[in-house]
Image 1 (cartoon, rainbow, N blue to C red):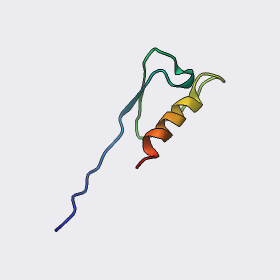
Image 2: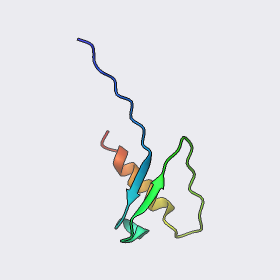
Image 3: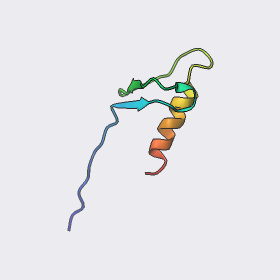
Image 4: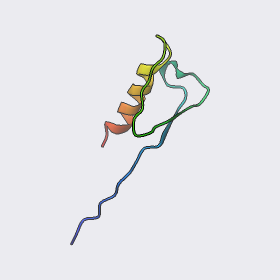
Length: 58
């Protein structure tokens, strides 16, 4: 029996109530190349930790 292969692409991530993101939903569109460039204390690390949590169980 041949195993099926599925290709998935993450296109966006929605965050709310996670660390400093707050209770207003934030949508991050993800392209082939995504960079987070912002001032200090704006949530860059929080976004990366949320993405890490999403993929850490794979």
